[in-house]
Image (tube, rainbow, N blue to C red; front, side, top):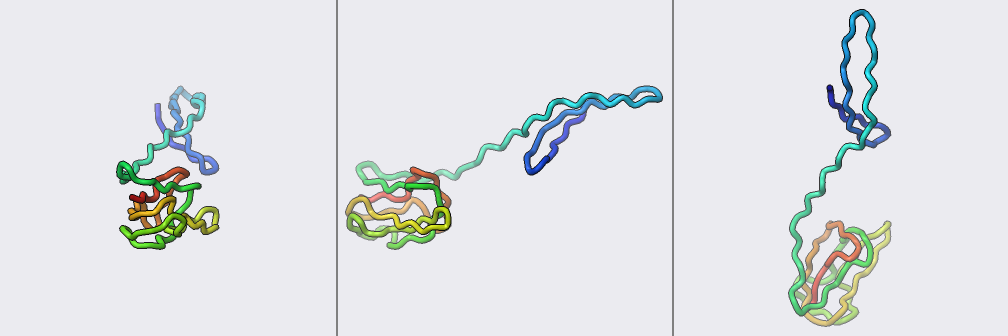
Length: 122
């Protein structure tokens, strides 16, 4: 039995093929049904989380952090723009949901999912 990974139209399949030798006539062995190759689980770096008693600012949609608009540790007021999230080629302003000192949990260039913690305000 020989094992192969076969790529068809960008999709990877794991197949096992039995090699059969016969005298004079080669009879092809039936190939096993293609099975999608198992995908490796993504390895995520441990992420910081918000401190207890603080207000968490979360991502409203998946996207990429374009810029932070204030310094880490700056004092902000509710409604102040704190960072810019790019989603589907649109720049979305993320504002402070409370007043206090902001601590970012992401940096410029990070990709985030919906609901990801971006910062907390204490």
